[in-house]
Image (cartoon, rainbow, N blue to C red):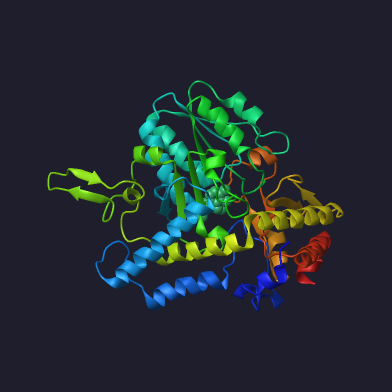
Length: 409
Ligand code: PMP
């Protein structure tokens, strides 16, 4: 059981921030999350007290930065139970990580005629790089069917795999429908056929226990800002041997151990060969603090609280005639519409009551072919949300019945 009231005190934005004179009710955690004071302090501490560069200096200040920077890497290694700390590569976020995997691994391993499997529920960041890589090498993108609820099943993975399948790139939890993919079963099946599994963890790692050794994923991408950390920092996890076979997509200072004027370059081993240039040091240190903070609360507790909130919200929404829900049974975000109200107009109505919800296609632009609606609203919870906030959200859903009155009245 979480002590949510005391947790909320850790978040400055939950203590005084208003929208339209209402206390902020933040239900857009799929987009980004609020930051606890511990993360803000860690970032400020670096900027205020030891803001040197990392891995470059031979003086105490620089060693202090190196130590904190590598501490963060170790914390993240433990957080996802990676086998080795060298498997944790700092990137600028999930999008960056997925691009590095597609161009660094995919482009160099795929051949004409090979098949890449995605689903229509993938985020643009786990779709567009694969389209481009497929075009470049003459590979083909196919989609694994979702079942009638929008969920990904092992059965449908089996139906989509052929002897030409080389990569399966899927979200562990999708960002609109929120279904949890059976990653371990998919990885077992894929590995028997020497297929590489790329997991988009942007919506899973922040919300549940992640164990890359148990699930067996070959690569995993996630973002710091969706798990209480700063923006502009994320992780590319890869099994060490695969990282050795992956080419860096950026080269520069810090990524090589030697080069000469003839252009002969010796790259460092992972993770450093991928981390050319001065990294986002305050971001990395902030992400380390976020992971410490989340670990103290406990990912199991976080997951259980969010499940309870979701069930409560769905039950309340189902009591309303004017709400259509598209993913009643999933574990993640709730995708819905207020009947007869354009999603962006509805989001503006929520805004006037201090409630932040997301409207649109949520960067999953081919999902509408499955849902048969062009846009949806989305509420997504985090461990600091409460049932009282959901009650207030439900009250505004009711007002959608008489939308114009509610908006202008
Ligand atoms: N994948 C999924 C499933 C996401 O939800 C997001 C963010 N909305 C991304 C990838 C991209 O994350 P970022 O913008 O932090 O790179």
